[in-house]
Image 1 (tube, helix red, strand yellow):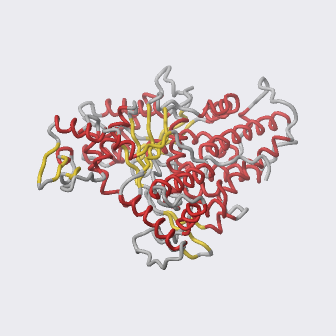
Image 2 (cartoon, rainbow, N blue to C red):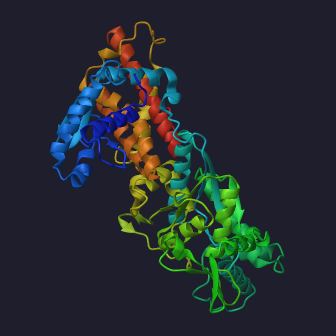
Image 3 (tube, rainbow, N blue to C red):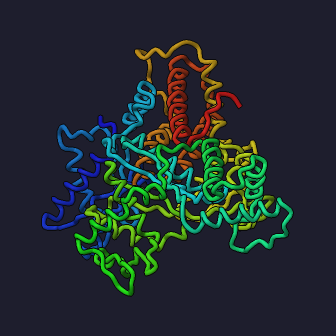
Length: 548
């Protein structure tokens, strides 16, 4: 039997398409999904619905014709899926649903038990070099919950891609120069004057958090008032950010400085490259990039009439450097206020001679923090916002990471601090970790080793046993979805469902003290469940407690 069955089923559907409509030109490959209702099999394809318009036929009629050819293919002598697929049906509005054989799932279970996490890996990446740039918050204050959400999304996406065979590096782009850094320095200078007894009217657009006073106090205590306040403040806050991220379980391979990029002359070099390609022009005393050539809605200024760079200028040079460092896929995680910036950067990437698909931009929506049922109001400049540090101190790393991932990145997230602190089934991270700890406790009391020669997994016939085995099988499929969508959200959903499947099984059936062969089969089921829970929690960067 085949470990990863999906590509083989896709091939069967493609062959059926060719036989059913030999002249059809259909560029998109058939897609397999997990049915929302387990009564409709293990895998489902909506290919008939997608073909309805070009073929001008009802999805149901298309599905029935495809079904006939799919069955012929699967029943042919020597076909690798012959013993894996129990039944195929055309159901509902025109879905083609595949029902997999129990024997297939039993072999999958045995494979997880014997090979552990190795059995769960799929080499989708083939060591393709990927750079994920995320957080990249200006070093002007502690990290907010918006940055925290980006941090865990980027970190877990990197974990998943590494697990799936990509060669992934994490990078933080440091905006360590420019207007916001100048404002930081001036904010510190004003607080220093306050400490010296001056009465200061603090500008509205300056940074007003208590951390600015902390920096000023440290500078005064050390007698460093003559230092470059911008540089000192940047270094101070960067150390705070690094410590917060480390405590959050997020570590970067690289910290790339915008200031060093400018000093290196690489921005001027990229302009020279673009001029030779005739992608730049001068107008009204400014230098413009012809981004409309590459699909942007208007051309963009890269050097203003006063000679200063726009944000796009260093970004073009920075992304050129990413490619020159050997990365073939660039993934950037940005906040929602950067949505309008995507097309101009993709245009820049194409101007550099790279395909548009070599840059992927993920917009991570904001998060609202709720305390006692009420949203906490936030204002970054005034320093009135919940920081990552406060979240970590209040609910801990595990709950913080899990809760920040519990909605799609494209959706706004409501983070309820009270729920995150509960040690009950209402708290999803506690519920998932408790499943792991509960299994660990049972396995500690298991007598001896499993006798593989006498192991009979066909004894696992109860509906709760079958449901748990099938849920284990969905782990690799879930990671594939996370990879395709570039969103780790589905892993949190899957782990909650896996924990629920285990609790349902264990609440109905005893493991130890049964007939010897049944006990051994159920022990293998629990061992495999622990392996999958362990790998899932590890990918999320969450601890795996043996006892709770």
